[in-house]
Amino acid sequence: MTEKQLVRRNQNYLKYVNSFAPPTKHFATCGRAFMVGGLICTIGQFFRFLLEYAGLSGEELAGTVSVLLIFLGTLLTGLGVYDRIGKQAGAGSIVPITGFANSVASPAIEFKTEGYVYGMAAKMFLVAGPILVFGVTAGAAVGLVYWLLGL
Image 1 (cartoon, rainbow, N blue to C red):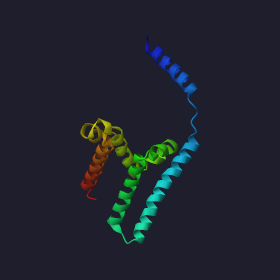
Image 2: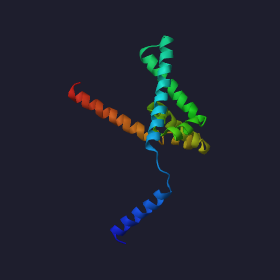
Image 3: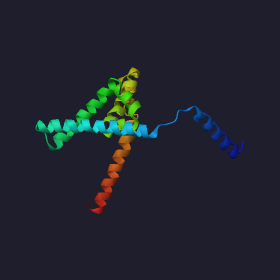
Image 4: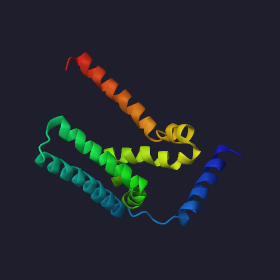
């Protein structure tokens, strides 16, 4: 079979598969993602206002708000609520801090039956591991550039 025939066969197959797929509602999906992502950020801001009123400031305030959002994301993942939010909101549910908590907690819950070491601990960073590696690498690269430029 020639390359042109393979390409044509693939194109025909994709047309066939897409004929069964429901049409994507891009504007509605983006709207829901925007609203849910904004709601998560609003909840974080609410926590910030409450903690400022309680007397926290600076790094204590930022750290406490982060911990509360991570806890909330992990709790909702454990209860199965975050997955339902993700199905409706799409990308809006992966606001960095709660989405990261979800990406660590989900595999830990899923693979717990395989044991604590080879299941939960080994698979916990299955999704989040590459994010950590590339995030740390990018941060180190930017820091090196700043250091070389003397900023």
